[in-house]
Length: 272
Image (tube, rainbow, N blue to C red):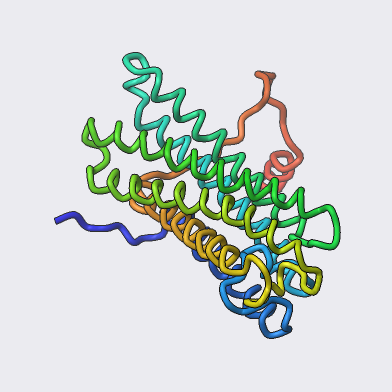
């Protein structure tokens, strides 16, 4: 029977990222609904942080979430490099694929910062910047998940990962891809219908407005894709628990060792 290590470790990094991001969404949703800033039934995630004061919290918290994502992606990159160090000479594709994963993961995190800093606001042109961030976040995230799924399969072949872990990541990657694509496609058609009226902004999309049912379908798809993205990150818990990091400060170039004020003070104290 395999015992799961629950001691403090890097495994809690992706778990904290997923839980903190979920908390951000739920907090902003609660505030937006209480202030009647959004229609409460399945709004778009971005609409929960489109207006002040929830927009300020969304921006601050989601920026931190994007930072946590970037750190998690980098830790995974280093971990995989360590695991496959002995296989680099026989299969250089592993190292190259791992670098691609790092790149797409950081692109996804960068998209998150764009979403955080450019609210989804129909009244100005910043919504196009926001939508660009959403494409980078979901598209980059989906590619990253598929790359990690492929790497997990490679590791399962040499006995480092289990086939079960590969299956879980494969299923989650499929869900993220399907519902992420449905989110964007449905929203395009919904927006086209919604623009036929001018009584509401997107955040207050009402059931009686054109395109509402397609809009809800898009929003449900977005929430499902986001949820599965968080679950995908949490699957790294056990792997991250097995590693540790050491930071070492070294001189940039070799120079004759010089005494420091701290050493001089120590020596003077000993003489006294």
